[in-house]
Image 1 (cartoon, rainbow, N blue to C red):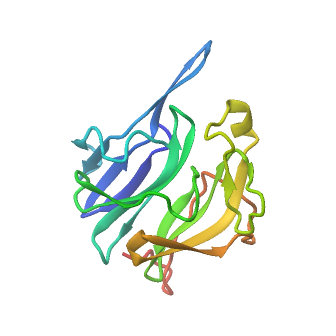
Image 2 (cartoon, rainbow, N blue to C red):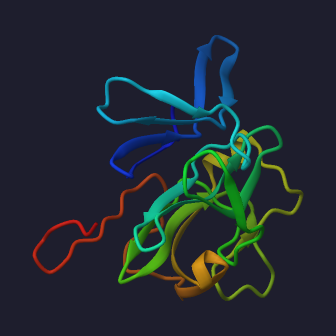
Length: 200
């Protein structure tokens, strides 16, 4: 699969969502996924659920909040109707998912990243197609039709914004719409403590 999420939670590796891609002469066939898998050794994997409540998607972001002992999953691309998502979900076991917020303020996007830093949850960068909303000052771009063509996707907008969550992911505030790095998607973001170690 491609465009999936991988993380460590409760002493297990977890893989969720993404898509299978089949390359044919007529083009690439994309099948988005909504399954969740876990493994305690990286060799033997157990399907936790074949159809998580958040539905098939790819390019979403996911992170673990150790203080709440939950996985959070947010955004991504729903391939069937080319809809960019900005929902936020959480789970304590990978099976039962709770919708935290249906329309987060960071707007629909995919290939973004999420992490916990200084006790807060952050969303960084990502991309989508479409034109900037008239009068927008916060970097949020909106689709005019809710759909996205392959051509537009290739010429899409790459965000360089940073958002921080409060209220357990139920409210998001813009930290900056013009971070020093160039807009991008499919990148990696990490948090290190003062000792140079990844925090738990």
